[in-house]
Length: 98
Image (cartoon, rainbow, N blue to C red; front, side):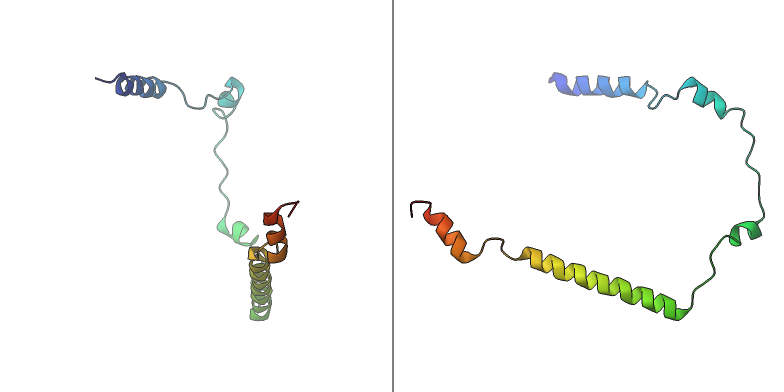
């Protein structure tokens, strides 16, 4: 019988007995006496939501995002081109004394 499975089982059992992320005592105690959060009316929350924009603004944003995506795709295509042109690559293969 191989000792590796027994060692792994022992390590897993030992790890299961530990506290994964111990908190500092002052942090653990600070939350124990904290009051329950105050409930607020839903109107207060919805009042913080920005007003809806019109369709023209949404269309302009969409067009701007599409244009940026097209520029990024074009840049990615340019980066896929070979870095070293064929003539230079041939000279490099021939070596310095070529």
